[in-house]
Length: 217
Image 1 (cartoon, rainbow, N blue to C red):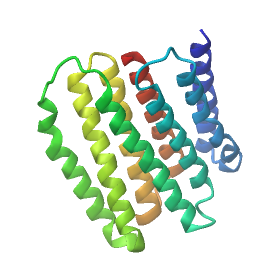
Image 2 (tube, rainbow, N blue to C red; image 1 turned 30 degrees about the vertical axis):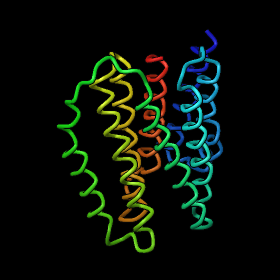
Image 3 (cartoon, rainbow, N blue to C red; image 1 turned 60 degrees about the vertical axis):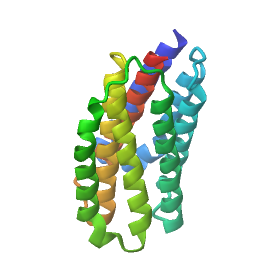
Image 4 (tube, rainbow, N blue to C red; image 1 turned 120 degrees about the vertical axis):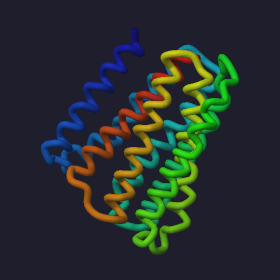
């Protein structure tokens, strides 16, 4: 009951935050951002214990650290790098998490999707590469890791039961969309309503992955 209450609170709070972004009140929404992921941290922490609980908490915690650091990224380039590292740790945690969950079968159909993930990776890097300057290596590493995270979610889709496999795949896809919009907006050209699209897909990603893992436990 307590978990359901906080899920509803997260949805309501996130909706208010996204509404503020949608209507252009980013100065107000800025104060809400650090309060969003803690809802998910609490939901996971009070759930019945499960084998990968600490890994999920670890991923959410570093996502929250990344959120806070990116709030101040315009003040110093180092803060953007540190934010990138925080999310890199979060994605590595999700990769480990997807691998350690129990599987229903050893379906190998996910291997057919490797070329599509590689196409995404090559396309986004070729699109951004001329504009990255000194950020080439950090962005390259990050793009490889998030692509691997996406591939592991596809593997989970074929090897886990329903509906957790669907939640996790949708979450990973939303994460890729969110990070792609963020990268294009920062390094290539401004994306209209970028904050709204980045954060709506990001919050959706975190919620879907959390939901999938909690249903899988």
